[in-house]
Length: 284
Image (cartoon, rainbow, N blue to C red; front, side, top):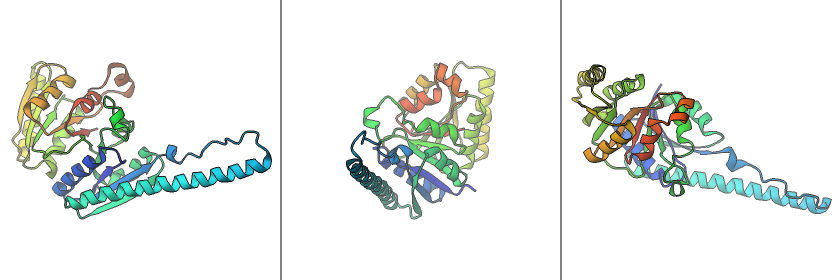
């Protein structure tokens, strides 16, 4: 049963924003927050044997020293992970979220997600990880893995949190786009927000009917949504529209094509997440 928000924090400059977005969502949904920090296998890898052909006695002493250093390093990594979680919990508590639990896990991020996803109403992750300042034009290494693996909605936090009042649904006529519209119609997360449904491309009967169907579904839920068709390519036209019209969030389907196809022709999803300066809610 979907009863909580799962938020991944890693100590990067995006962690505070993840917490602020989680607090916003938790209060609107009325659900608790689970904070997760995952220590990857790379962080727990033992140091290689550097002893070479050293004499037996010296080698034994060196191996003992290396083992002690490995143990100390593991403790420091765990202490750092716990400190990251404590800071994140403090941010959520200060924002008025009373039900917050923290989990320090060892292993693979995707495996951790798979174990806990069934309980999630929403998954939160930052756009970039700990190397964010050194990889401005790139996405976090775990972001695409999580989006492709998850079955729940994923909210990708922008670098800074801003109040969310205007939401743009990027409509492409696909199954995930209608799933996004249905989610917005049903979820209290979007109650009282200004909603627009926008398709990109040329005007045609199929697109106009799809937009009308989306607006009708939202209207049945008490949401009066604006619809529009914007010319151009999705990754450029939508980004421009977001900035010019002052949207605070984008909702869109994620990775409509196969992984191999997206590697060859590029992915609108990746381009949008990379270029948009607002949070993006992704639906599989």
